[in-house]
Image (cartoon, rainbow, N blue to C red):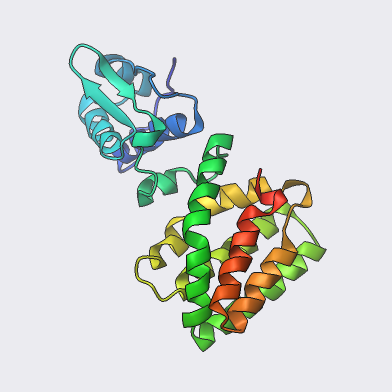
Length: 231
């Protein structure tokens, strides 16, 4: 295991160190159970002071990625211990590819909360939010006709984020922003080879515009269970 030195001329060095190690853990390069090098060795590999390194390790510990124990050293914790909804952790994931296991877990999570959020969006969306949803849906249809993966992912992510924002529920609202990174991972993966589920998106859009909460719930659930979304 070898780490590359991080430039000490940049501000927020401990954050840079934490991000570097976190991305190695999140990508699977450092799988659960991996024992990190000692502070001295790791500091030398990264070219940083022990003070900066310790602060970085504290950040990773607080997010559930690692744990330190006497005699056994610092170990990568199991995925079940990761604080995956931590805003900074999600930001560190930006630009990464998710693992198949994470896609399946995220789909399970979406099945639980997104149909309910979609029902609420149908019932509570403001006029302005319905207008915005119409605009985003029209753009989604355009991207389906002139498909490019990057543009589709961007618009589809906005479509689903807007549903959470339109729910009117303060506990759902953060997901519209917080999960953007994971949505992009998932949508990029599930839309490969043109798997866009546009018909299911249309049913969701139509139900929200008609303020039909039950139809919106069922349409969202149908999207979650669509063959192309079952990975």
